[in-house]
Length: 235
Image (cartoon, rainbow, N blue to C red):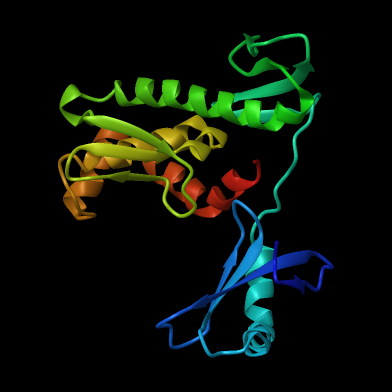
């Protein structure tokens, strides 16, 4: 349960969670827009809560800008269409089914019939997309020369990084790339694969990305920079 509520100019009520920390010298403020829209405040042990609230009000304009620029979560329900992994998919529900059924109509459209209780609808859709993302991710990786393949693949739900490559050869990817155009997802994949040769962002690295990706790499990179925040609008 939140300790306080911060009302935006739009009327939206954002929960505020206040934490007291020993050893902290100053009040710290962290607006969060995902997975939930909240404001987290940490304050020193002897600082009263009222001082933390006053500090929040002093930073009102800054907080308003952050929440205004972040996409609102969009709920999904049976009958909706959602685009992922290159297809526009209609979501249906059949409580009598125990398992999901994915029907591919053509290269553009599909239907996902979700079974089970309606209360688990969104979660089962999310889990299905995440699982399908891993399948497509592996297929994209295997289009590159084998010398670039990672030792291990991890799928995560990160808020600020679309992919990462460790020196041990483990690559992590945000499953929310499933909502991006496939050529944009492929750009992130080739970007991380290029780190197998260059663990930096030198000109040689970017040249390797271009070689792995081919024509259109700058367009894909630009799309992600402009539209990346939109990939967090669901779930």
